[in-house]
Image (cartoon, rainbow, N blue to C red; front, side, top):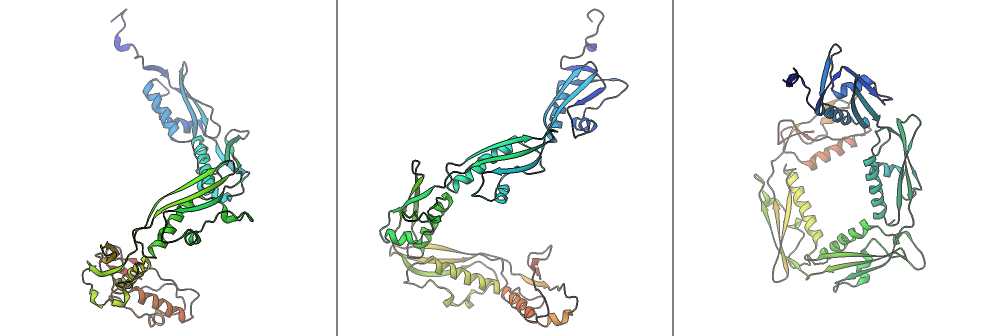
Length: 409
């Protein structure tokens, strides 16, 4: 003890003994008692309460966490604790000044700031960057967007204003392709969707759109894959911007590769209980000796998938592997991945208030317990429509809960 005072009786530096009163200041639309509940600061009116710095810090965090307040402070005084708050305003309205190129509904889909939600400065700044990026992708490289916040008199609501200066859309002056030998520039430019501007008429096709410029690489690749060049590569695309003219020059750099023909083909079947021997050879469209064409492979995959579905393997997948040979041929292997056979377990009819189930079931050529055949289900749908008894006929398919191979229709 020092001067008859115990160390145990001296309050620690980080804790002060306060009276039980908790006062709330600054609130406008949220009740003081509600804010006290958010703070989780409990007191007893007949005694005093010791609040440590960490307790008050946690209380501030808890109030902030509600999202209802943009600023929170807590102070101690002789009468107790005072909580100062500034409520986060609600967005009453969002408006766009100077917008022409993009519809308002489209912009509202893209931004996080929404009417009737709490205002967030971070959201507003991020939305401004997002909108600027969208305009630039559309070719408005000089677009400027200025966000503004207008507080209403009560301070609890705001109007958000995006002031947009779109500027002129950049145009494409020239398109060139580097690395092509098998097909000339005119042939390749003809398949592209984008067009350079005409010196006689500045048509809409001349406008620069970065996404479209990038997508044209796939157009070029698709063209070569249908003309016998499976090893075609897009190296890169270069967009050069001339600021003084607001014009672009687009260059596509490609590697055509060698021309190939179809070689041998085979099917690797990993689907249990599937007899692939009945699949018709005529359904395989890539014939040995013909020019390589990716479309024939894709159509063959579609034929195999139909065969699988007809035999009840509606979830089976078909993939293909290309194996180039030194003779400039490509051997194709179709891989049928394993899948369960699906069976039709239930046929339920709903919506027929006047027509009996029996009349409808007469048109159904499948029955419970059959292997599930999508083509038959589609035909039965048409047969029911042909009765002309109904305004509409729809089919809903789903696996029965708790099963992996039983379907209800």
